[in-house]
Length: 124
Image 1 (cartoon, rainbow, N blue to C red):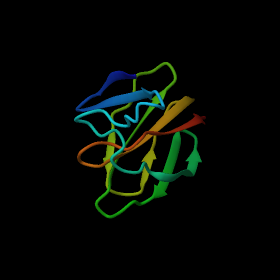
Image 2: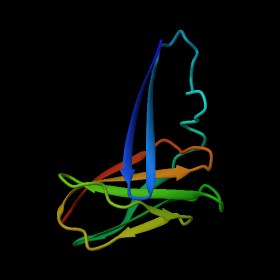
Image 3: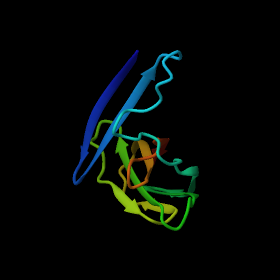
Image 4: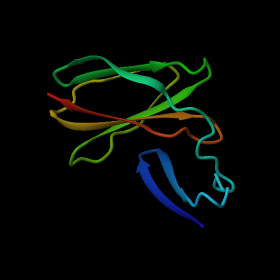
């Protein structure tokens, strides 16, 4: 038996479709037909490289020169930010109001996306 939860989150021009599968161990089913949920590895070793009042920078291991990453955040009580897309292995957010933030990192693999890496932090 396989249950699938599909949730759409519209982030301006980019729509993420999050597919969470709950699979009974005896079924042997490990993917959703027509959609690969984990076609590539997520960003590895995501870490804060600098942080100051209203600012935070992250870096991660570069998967390869062709890799594309999508990064966004959500401050507690607010809507998600616009998505930043980059081929670099770093990103910087500035002019952030103080609050509790959740940052999301995804590798876009062309035919699907990696699992999401989530990083929580407090911005002063």
